[in-house]
Image (cartoon, rainbow, N blue to C red; front, side, top):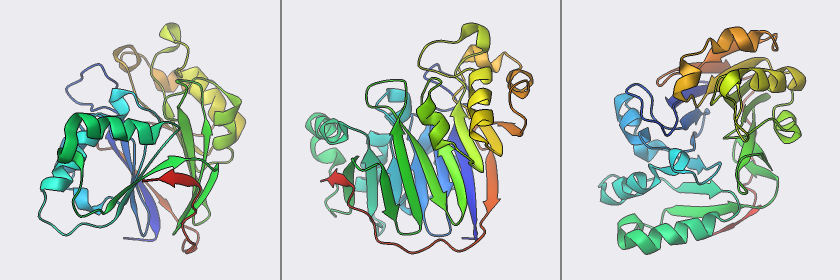
Length: 270
């Protein structure tokens, strides 16, 4: 991998079916890791289309348990179980209740989601700051469901923030503070905005207040796709704006090689 960060959008739609958009999933590639942020329905097919090897994924971070954010977790685990390739260690992290969520999946699907190689580990987010080999993660609760969280990745002097699903909140502004890229959901047009989700004006206000350099909007419901989201967002945000689509990529050169630290134990695992 090059000395750069790359965001690869695998799913930019919502739970409402769309012929060109899968459910939420973003691949964050660092010089050392391939990290999935959510794994909604359609992720595996998009990975195959983009020629991304499922065995290359080293981390998955889940923002919350809605099906459009975790729908392909079962197929992903089942695919790994049935693969004959040598697999790397995969660590999957989720918010409060994640270990119970995994136990529920194992109760429903049994051995079909249990990897006999024991190279999949599950962790529940506890400490707000986690140091991993090559990157730092800061998370905070956001306004959506009780377990919903947003993420802030700090890698080689760069910052990338992810909202998950969230309404406007100070926690999301803090996570996005001075971010090189903020990936914020934009579920609905302003005139159809609902509580617990962002519209273009709300996402843009967060980005402006946080001093974000580049804003990427994603997670679109049909009414958002029929609206001029960029024009609305530009009224409130002075930086660069991108409307993500499945397959969209954005690269961010690193200022320095990421430091090599020891993975923090700031969570409970199984």
